[in-house]
Length: 352
Picture (cartoon, helix red, strand yellow):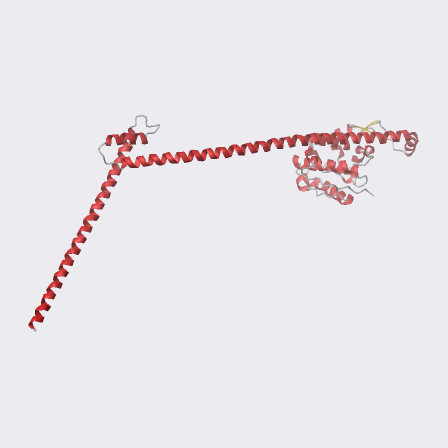
């Protein structure tokens, strides 16, 4: 029966997610005796299955793993096996199959970073005895990884055995080898494994700590930069508001001068024209002729407006005067009629 997984929560800010691709590839090549060059090569799910086979012996049906898978629907079959293994050893992790099968770098890198952290927690003590090449040979399409099978791997005894060298597994040979290995060899294997694992873990920890420190320093520098930019932005806003207030103040003053000159009715019209010429001058109007024409047009328009206003005022005054005269005539007529009626009444009284 396969051992159960030791689940530990790994958040997105965990140092495990800051491990670089080179370290991930070195770790995968060491555990699986592969020669991977790109993270995208793990998209089929076969590599993850072999890592779990190394951690939990007997949990992965390696004969069903398709190492030659080339399309996403073939990848999905491998991930179905991986999900079954997760259920079997009680791994508390959801596999993002729909993203991994697209062979995108970032998605597969994050999954391998999580897998490396999980491996460090669940790595068995006898991992150096794991025959990666032999186990992989049970799968389908393993010939796709021929270059990787030429890598030499250290055996538990400290000797180096080529991955391509056939191993004699006959009962007689096994018994002879078993008798030839003494207690000193076993102790040497345990010591070697302990040292290798400790050194590997220490190296990974140092690299992660160094990378974390660099990222924290960069984050602090960015925060300082953002704070400085916000301060500069506030100062610029205040300066701009002050300039706008000053601009509006002088604009209003010039507008008042313009209105005064346009409504001026004195004798110094030539001076008025020259001042308006200065007000209306532009960079394109070098000789000032256009500005002068504009000034004259403005004065003429102002005079016409004043004349029209005066004419309207005179008309209104005349109409008002006519109305008043008409009212006076009517009042006089009424008064005269009333006097006549009074006199007639007096005559009637005298007669009676």
